[in-house]
Image (cartoon, rainbow, N blue to C red; front, side):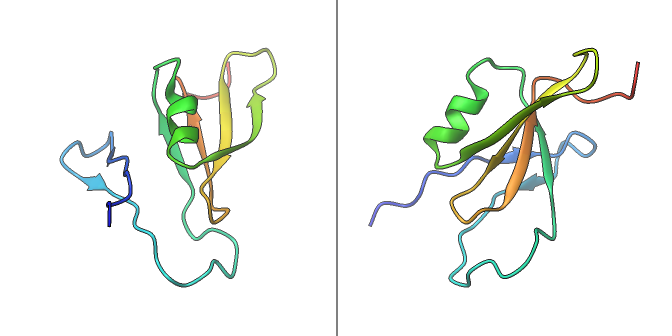
Length: 91
């Protein structure tokens, strides 16, 4: 059996801490307990996540367009967001 592709994540506040999501046998029964906001400046970031099994739920921006992000979900429906830069507050 070929192991699933995973995308290791790095916490920016603590660069030595990492997270690797693992598939579990139980179905999701409620709203997400954790919501991840990912930052990746690569133009291909959303396409890479889709290639790993995510689907795009929507694209959003703050009024004035100073910050944009894409809401995605994993194959089990757990939502997470990805943006090219961190949100630093309202302008």
